Image 1 (cartoon, helix red, strand yellow):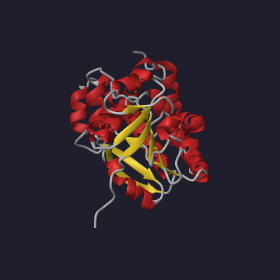
Image 2 (tube, helix red, strand yellow):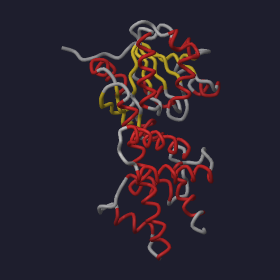
Image 3 (tube, one colour):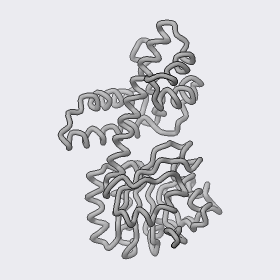
Length: 294
């Protein structure tokens, strides 16, 4: 008995720093990709890899699966309303891999169902490096049978795991980023304080990463982006601030008292105001330095 097969062709909307390598991996797996991006330069970068089209409707027309890799729910709703929903084939699956809001995702799922199609949310974690290496953690929310059918396609981009019904993927993505944002903020405060005390940050990281204070912030973000001064993770402070706001909204909607989450949201909002939304999220260190007299 054979497992689910890859679709022969998919639509793909959103070819930014994450979507570009993701679409390349899908194409490398033998799937024909019909792609659209609002930026013509993004399509030119994939010339010869995907088939470029001139609208979101063309990207969706006749496709069994359409992938969205967009910044947020506002852009997703705009794209869906710009002809994509009307162009979806009956029985098609719309896969939203964007960092969307879980409650809005559930509402969108109803609209997609009314159109005779199905929505699955499958946001990712791992940044540009993970997208390029096809090692993204992919959090899938949707029907179990559909998620299994999408397994080989999603596996071409990373490690998919169904985490619940539709909306669950976007909920977990936001909560994951809240934990990541809090960890990086706490680690950066501690490491900067240690540095002012006279400790060597590289030595601190070596010790902490073998102790209980380690996190992705100390294991990856500080060694790879902060200490070298490159600040090039590929994920912006603006997107991080947006994701932690989504997580706080979800926490409050469930009745949990989000004191820590609220503080994290406030600090990231202030960082974006100082650094600008396009700053790399690892530049939270620069925000702490500037607000601490450096």
